[in-house]
Length: 335
Ligand code: SAM
Ligand code: SF4
Image (cartoon, rainbow, N blue to C red; front, side, top):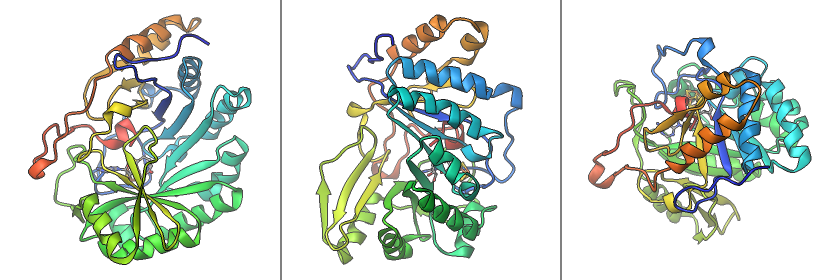
């Protein structure tokens, strides 16, 4: 164990999100274009390199590891990587190993994930209507995801549903999605749609739906109480008194959460992004590949990158004007 990672604003970096692939079996309209060009395989970190990378971060104080993508569960042999991370849970160095998934492969992998030490999974699901699901994901099919959710709960995994809030798309489903989550004892978080990537507007199925408006919709049917709880990330929580449910709101654009930011993100090619809203990144892959027998240069490169972690992002959603609009896709940095 070396000295922990502390950035210039005294924030301890304890949370690493890692994208393990840029590929996906869905083509959600707000995330990807239909004809995506994916990276050549050799650009990607191998599973062994992902292990070295994550293990180095864990040695430097990362306590929580979230695996994402693209769709993490479509990466070939990804379970080998999850199983390799179990050793860090066993020693207590890692407190939580988790993933964000579209759920399409959960039926196959739920038991193996539980066995590897995963206890919580975020499943992204924007609608409970078959046709709307097929439209928003283009290639996805709802029944397959619902079977995945069933399998995950049966395996003992706790599920949080992440729904992107889209005006004119899932606005009318708010009560239904909320009740479905309550019945199944799943947490629910609404995500404000972010201007990510150059994916055009022609396929816009829904539009920006401010989470203040989502909250106001809840207030029409429930007693809504704010919770003080924060996770170091962009989520805020409320409780619905009638159901006891906790509902999260992720508003990366319209609220400032940067002062408590404890996280960094790594792409599947080993670029470390210190802030979701900034382009600055450090390429760790070359350092890793140039030094197969020692982790010291990699640790130095990580420390140098963390020294550059900015105080905050540049998004400004005021008056619907999008300053700081991002050109990279969420599937690249891993949402
Ligand atoms: N494929 C996995 C999934 O869908 O859960 C993991 C990767 S996906 C990029 C992570 C999250 O980013 C998903 O919850 C997805 O809904 C969200 N996301 C993608 N594009 C987004 C956008 N433009 N605005 C807000 N959330 C977005
Ligand atoms: Fe794939 Fe997730 Fe992006 Fe949808 S949001 S296209 S499931 S990576």
